[in-house]
Image (cartoon, rainbow, N blue to C red; front, top):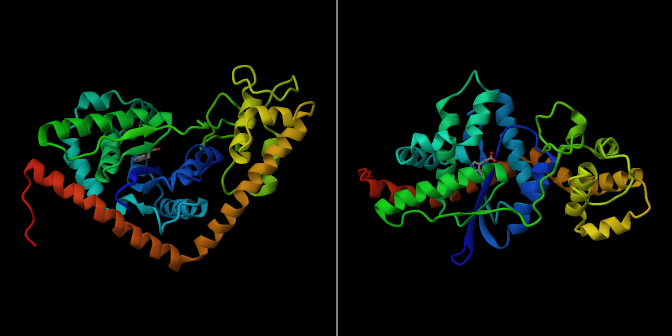
Amino acid sequence: MSEEKKILYSGMQATNALTLGNYLGALKNWVNLNEEYDCFFGVMDLHSLTVRQNPTEFRQNARKLYALYVAAGLNPEVNCVYYQSHVPAHAQLAWILDCFTYMGELNRMTQFKDKSQKHSDNINAGLYTYPVLMAADILLYQTDVVPVGKDQMQHLEITRDIAERFNNIYGNVFKIPEGYIGKSGAKIMSLQDPTKKMSKSDENVNATILLVDDKDTIIRKFKKAVTDSDANIKYDVENKPGVSNLIDIYRCVSKKSIEDIEKEFEGKGYGDFKLAVGEAVANELAPIQEEYNRLLKDKVYIEKCIKENDEKAAYFANKTLRKAMKKVGLTEMIR
Ligand code: TRP
């Protein structure tokens, strides 16, 4: 980690198989920001516990997410790629920050309201204080920028509010982080209902491209993608959401502009276009999948990365934690 670069922090929950949406909307952007910032990327496994998990599957999913981070290009020898639960400072700072967060603020969180409805049999305190743990994640590393999706912006706002409140009382303990919404703004929609976000929990398997889908599956799903009846390859999110989503996907994997793509497919049919998008996606994912499968088998290497990065993260996190503990008046441990 260098002194002059700004610090970037982000992470994903370790719950399910990742989708093309997670990749194009987040992971690929992180890879692009790699050089500009000193980066921390967490496998956010503590957050996943807010919903009941099958322990065996959960552990495997966390390992898979770690391997996918690395396979996608987050080099663990340059960035800090680590497990949230392996750095106890997250839970410790979250407790302190809990005591600086008002229930009124947490009551306003739209994700809490949504999730309480979805999991009405398990509205636990962790679900409620989820944004405070997220604030701890971010603030521990003196983060400058946090690339997050729109759905997490409210959590970033509360992070800033908590940090400012704390700093107003105790001086400059935390850096106030800024949100970062990717320039491409790639929000990938369902292939079956292009007005809905592509989601790993979609019941229709054809709606979602998984990062681990093979080439035939990818092409088959793109061929079945819902479009419209006027056979014109034009970008028009309102009137042609299906075609526009495919153009967005193609744009992200080909680096071509919307105009270039429209020109490339002028006079051609949807069949040709869907095949081209499917192939481009499959080609982009192939090397990642190959590396991912290799990494999952190379336990020694992965575990060495995890261990070293857990330590690296803990070093930075503990510096901030110690400062916060001292400021609030907790007694320092005698070693
Ligand atoms: N809540 C985020 C999500 O579900 C994951 C997350 C947890 C996160 N802690 C974070 C993202 C800190 C950015 C920074 O997407």
